[in-house]
Length: 448
Image 1 (tube, rainbow, N blue to C red):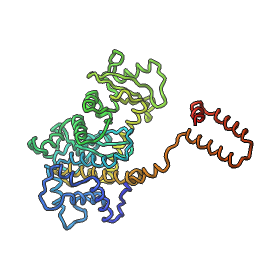
Image 2: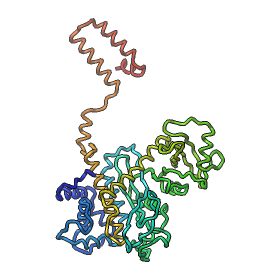
Image 3: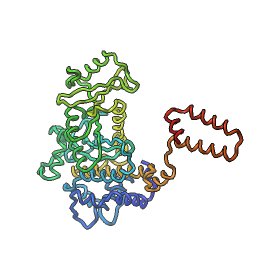
């Protein structure tokens, strides 16, 4: 988080934010997310003030006041149920990716990453849709939400793309008030989505990201989302899924005409006495109940001896090493959660309205997008623009054959100008040198 130092003056932070807003076209994005102006104040001023408050690590009510509006005006802006915050996050990420696209190699494999993290509200009682949610790290139920997040990665830069603040589908676990709004309205659909199944919502987030022109070929997810149905739904969207499978005895895959669970399939492959590779143990292609083909890769678990992990993908043509490398990108979303919680006030807000919580989460994602964009601008030389390509053209790539031809011609010119040895002897030396080269290169030199 060193991209913007907290000791910098406010005007320097405002300059970085203004540059970012101009690059992505923040005014055009706001007009597309159904924002209805109630005051004469430009909404970009609200967003800019919220970003500076996050950089200063201050809450909504402790941030530096401005004479243009009050904190109550900003709170009403966040609580506006008509603003489509999910669409705002998607359009924002799409604009940032468009700015970075000239710096991304066309051979890069672009991927979407699905994961969730605890949005803790331990001291809240009247927050809307507050629920008892299970924390997988502490292995106990806590008060809060599950922040389901969809991210985008090109292996260099990670950007949060979409989100859903998940409550509980079980009414017994819901602690806060629940307002039954008309599901035809945006606020009603948002609350209905918060009480839906997590896997179903995850597919909806991927579909929404694709509609807003987020480029990707793969979707990465861990074992909590991994199932044959999930792989099938991702494939129907035109993407290939890569995930870690649970070693369950209830899910079967067809291999060479017989059905096996993941554990039974591992024993079958081990009984075939296949020699384990350096980076993985075994790999095979199976079929799920729906008939979709999956490539399974059994990898040694470095944390536990005599144990293994199972990766699966619908892209059966990928080499197992490529599957392992792609799945390793999933860790980028974990670093996002850590950075957002430690520096960007991810779950630290006094807002109690559910729409306001979604707005707060969208602003946090925007703050991370700004930092990721600025880091790419500082470290990637290709962001310099035409100067980078002009410097590259000044030193074009030369093949080995061209270099050798140039070297021999220069040597002959030196011999003709200043003969220090018999020309016949030098020619014999050059002929011996050419004959020692590979035949393909030697033939090209003789033609030259």
